[in-house]
Image (cartoon, rainbow, N blue to C red; front, side, top):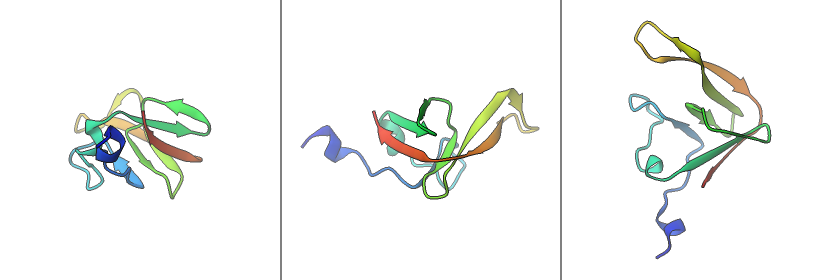
Length: 82
């Protein structure tokens, strides 16, 4: 069995926050790449391919619960395994 066949399929909507219903620990066992508007992004906290958006942190800003403040950017999204 090759490594490519043991990887789970990348979901349409994925989040890095373990409290989110879109979090999938099996996917994060492998390195994931996100291409947004044709550029490689390494700071993506959440994405949705079908709706065409990503959420990224806004500098060092945090909300009142200590979580990074996120901004939603719209455009073509492509997720893939590295």
